[in-house]
Length: 333
Length: 255
Image (tube, rainbow over the protein chains, first blue to last red):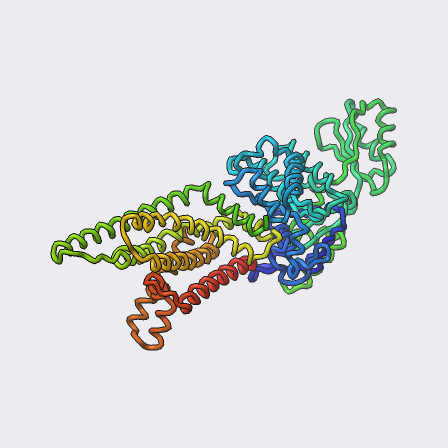
């Protein structure tokens, strides 16, 4: 549905995004993850036809974003960083205006308005001026605007900013429910959001894509060992040594509060059962045992660290990150 | 409702929920009313003088009231219309709705045209209200309607040109005050070209420069002359300004 090939955007000397390539299939939800200023918004603006790319091609539903932008715009619902609302209009007037702008009319328009008002919980504020609404409501009006004409492609720039936790969960559910029928790109710097709603994550840093995969596989690829945390109520002094003798355990750390241990073992080996048996047969008072998987947060930090960090950790990084680092080494800069 | 009409309707609504139109309209009508009153009173005083000296008076309202009034309105429009146009694009940019508008499935031509039409309709409404002046005068006196109507045509064309200049200025910046000042500047420049032209006299350069100013074209219409040359001037200047505004808005995306 969305196909981006080698797009580069330069502002004078500054390169905002550099040879970015990715694609989104029909019905897929893709998260664009990256620190502020990484080029997320620039990429989205190119896709929506708002700005042209300096090089490369971007296509939405087979239409070129620069040359056939009108066709592209018809198929896209776009929520920019700041919700694009007119403060002097009421919510209903605004949605009506947006619908007419996109060629909806009559019962189609009123049906679409009713659907979005319902879906985003805008009923109570329908006839209030947008200028008097809270940030959260404005954000939801912005989302309603993007969804109004039921576009096959949705581009959402930080859709949950300014919402309270309950609303964030609602919006995430909404986005999840759109998957399958809609292709969605959403940008975020909140990592759990990407894990929660997306099938695929693209991590972008300094204008380059440094990783692209499913959230699970990303953390799996970057993990170099399994970690297990356990808490023992009556741990004797020799517990640490005994646990180290369990086959597969590489390292035991006991530097947390008394009774809490962290075990590191080889990738792909599950030592939980053995450790549990050891603790139970010796009556160590096992109260907690869990495996720690690397969160996307860790992945993200590892991938977007500045260059030295990246090159030290190349064996951890994904192939694309390796390629990116090698590129940087080769380039005269 | 087509997208263009949707934008026009929305712009009109934005105008009428903000105090700007009411304040600008009130000031405009007050000044025009006052000017009309003064010209009529002076004309009356002149008539009385003539009566006393000659025993009879032939007063030409077209010359003494309308022509003066039409030249004064020119200046009032120069001050007031930039206030109406300054928000058109500057506000969209400031409030970040510009990106929304530009990513809507509607061409830039249509956006520019709709923005222009909305403010032009507001202006025509205000101009229509000044129609009270000739209508009341017609109740009490005789005058020739033809130059009054061509004068109104001139005002509509002049206003359209001023509004297009204002639209261009508004596209140049996201600050409304700056937009208003840019249009004042451009309009005064266009005005003063007439002075420069007459200074250069009957040379080719002088004629070209005079032609570029709206002054002589507007004067012809106020005097009741409908000349194709003048209509072509207003039409082409209007299109040029709208075209420039279009280019400026479009180039914004490249920055």
